[in-house]
Length: 558
Image 1 (cartoon, one colour):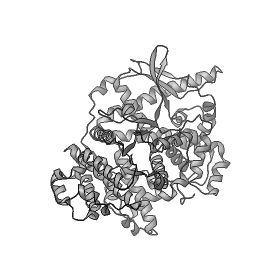
Image 2 (tube, rainbow, N blue to C red):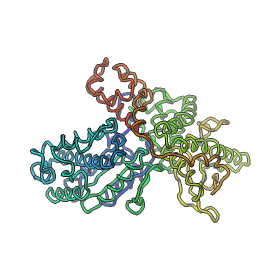
Image 3 (tube, rainbow, N blue to C red):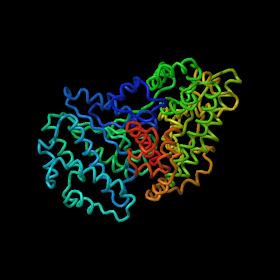
Image 4 (cartoon, rainbow, N blue to C red):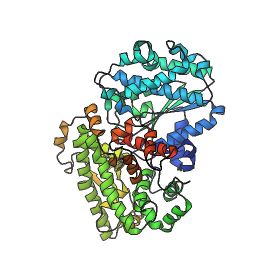
């Protein structure tokens, strides 16, 4: 299917009608979809752009289609605006916001299924202080909006705001502050409406670096477990603070990844591209198959990285020349992807030393040793190649924390946890293939990628022990501050120019033409404002606004 002359990089920008046409399932994806639809609690782990949101949305759509027979209701809940809720004033703000978001999404989903709760009187039992049940949704929306703007109001009083919106003291609204009230409501809904269970699909649940919010979310996630509720959440590797929640005991953990050595890797990644462009455009890529495959391998199984790099290399989907592909891989994986990682230190200042050290370690130690090993094998005509390295399980915690942030960015990924090397236990990591290709100076990526992938061996790797001499200057990392002033961070971020967003040049220019120059302009605007631009109608305005808004939220959140 075709979407103008550009790719859609985020699932949030895909309409529900187009979702299935775009989605390409690997065997692992299909397994993960079955886990999402199962009864067991699930954490879906993957770095940015790997397709976590896509899987949640596809699972929701498939469950919607089966609802009349299965009576299992999927409810998608997006927590992307969590960073705007001022949890530092009082964590109860965040708890109220989470329950309100779930209730809002649940009521809307029930109505889409033709189940009008106002006819059952169920909500009235829990919101008895509201005259008309049909007003509950609007009041929840108003309350959510107030909480999402609490960071900018130093005089914000949640009790006062709740009284203003709901007309009663916050303590009387147990449904948005106490998990037992919430579970009782769900049980009542299920029994009254003949629903077996409700599957809550949490997206962007832990996408920011705010441990206080993350711990509160996982407490709720664990406490919601009951016969009528199944919780599933998309999380990032490396940066999640679970608190007393135990990832492998309180929920299954499944990875969202594509193995670059699998037999159908190229086929599936090509299909992802094919589903977004017309036949004429796709034929350009097919005719330049070696160049196309070089970009596919460089993406290391990450669809977003593939689409973004392919868009750049093809000169906006017009060609796919070898020179452009080589230049794109070099620039994209040596500059762009690292800039995205380093940007985190501007947003989360308390992590700056960890972020900067992790980059230094990979660029100056891991990549150099990887290249040296590969060159040595070729000169000795042994030909084994590597993109792997290992970190001792008991390496300094500060080193492992830096590595985990690199996982979040997608620069490295955990390949094998707890592998035995001689008598010691190590974790094996895989460097993004594009980052390796971009770091080589002797060969061009298009000429080099086949040689590496054809001879890739997990038995060849660089090894970093408990006190490796490569862990230089780690004493300087021990004074890091993890909790930062979120209000100050947000104020600075909202002044950033929109040029920093992950949007196309056309979209950026369109926004500027109607006066959207800073991130705050997008968050404060409405899609109707875009129609001021020449040639932009309601449909195009909505599309560009949604893309810009989602890109802004993603940028602010890290």
